[in-house]
Image (cartoon, rainbow, N blue to C red):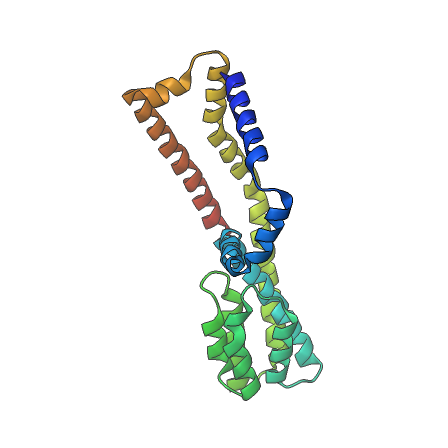
Length: 235
């Protein structure tokens, strides 16, 4: 059965190579299909979009870099608005477009604290919200803004180090859960190697379909529950 499948795939591949377009036609099609490129680019960006956890981690890292850069600019003697604009331009944020109102508020003397709060994402924006509180205290009370920002940066670094430590400790349980999730597929391969025909039972009978559906559902629930517990532990 395996030899026949390999032969069929090889025959289909040979037919495609024989009847498919040549290299010149392929290049001409690519040169004349510029109108469709933006659609493919948007699709590729959608498929390669980072997960919410990675996006939140990127925002946390960018917030730490922002606080460090802002503290350095304030220590150099620049005004708070100018220091914030220069610090934002020096940091690579995951979504710089959301910070345009913040840059405009810092440059024009607007409400920087409110702009920081509105620009902070729901996940990963803790640093920006703490910086907004720090900015409001520094403006209203007149305290040293550079010292407050440096304290916020120190707090964010400690929290990030704690999250990395927890993630390192959870790497083992996550790997074990993924290995356990793959074991049913390994069992099917072993059963097929022993000529027990497990696929005929799973797809050819009602009890087999019920077992297959229940197994996939339990496997997916186990993976989801493991990831959920790991995510809760990292917050």
